[in-house]
Each structure stands twice: as C-alpha cells, then as structure tokens.
Length: 212
Picture 1 (cartoon, one colour):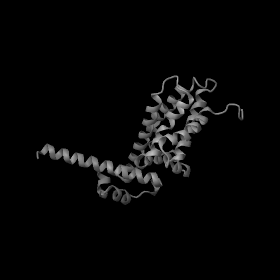
Picture 2 (spheres, helix red, strand yellow):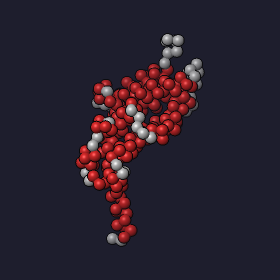
Picture 3 (tube, helix red, strand yellow):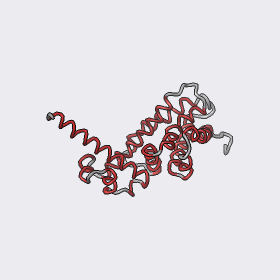
Picture 4 (spheres, rainbow, N blue to C red):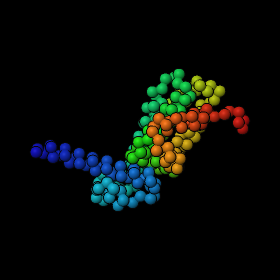
C-alpha cells in the first residue's frame, strides 16, 4: 500500500467518524433538544471516542450546532426543490403538496429522515445561535410559495402570504413532535399526504372575511 493510499484511507475514516458523530448528535437532538444531550451519549451511539469530537468539531456545542445546521439545510433544500419545480400555473393544492412533501416523506420513512424533521421542529421553537446564516434559504422557501400562490389568491398581499406560509410551516413542524404525527407515521406516504395537503392548503388559503 502506498503512502497516498494510506492518507486516503485515513481521510475516509475521518469522514466516516465525523458523519457518524453528526448523525448520532442529530438522533439525540431530535429526541431531547440541545440541553438534554451529553458528549458521552453521542460518542457511545456513534461508536467513537470523546477525543474525536474535539478533533472534528472542537466541542460538544459546535457538534450540536453542525448537526442542527445540517438538519435545517436538508429540510430547506428539499422544500425549495419541491417549490421551484412547480410551474407558475400551479394550483393551491399543488403548492400545499410541494410545501408538505418533505415532512410527508420523513413521517413515512422514519429513522434519520424523521430525526431531521424533529430537530428542525425543536430548533424552530428555540432558534440556535447562527440561525441567521440560513435566513436566505428560509426566504427562498417563502418566496417560492408566494411566487406560485399569488396568482391563485390575487386579493392577498405578499406580506400576508408570507405570514400564512410561516404558520403552515409551524404546523408541519409541530407534527414531527406531536402524537398525531406519530399516528400519521404508521401510514403510507400517499395516505399521509391525503390527510395533510388539504390542511396545509387551508392554512395558505385563509379566510379574509374572518375578523376583518
């Protein structure tokens, strides 16, 4: 084995260790949030030693932050992809379906996918430090909804549509942690979407006649 091969092997092993630590942190964060996770629990779950956390991340706090940011980016990238694939002529139901689909897939798949959503839901309640780094992606998600929703609801201004989008996002995040989400997770993806899309569409549609 050449020196280059040995270096490559060490690099790959390091990448596996880093990914394993991040996945373990994500799993535990999804269950208890950042305040309930210990360094020992993460390293035990990842099958790594404590020194690996310091080497790859610097500290437990920075490992948790990296796992949280990874979860948020996965979620937002999936949502942005769904929304940007919609034509400008998309219906309200199609917009709601695209907006909800990452959560639908996570509930149906469980495991790491659902851990991502649960982490997103928890940090949505208590945003971590550095949240501002992802503002651009949150804006792209809202802009994607508004772009295709505005022609369907011409009487609703962009500010109100952004507010409804945030409310719909909050509702989906809540499902990841609530008992009703656990119930939905027992169903196939098609059935979960059948339940969720009308509810999300209703949140986006709103009712301008109520309380005005």
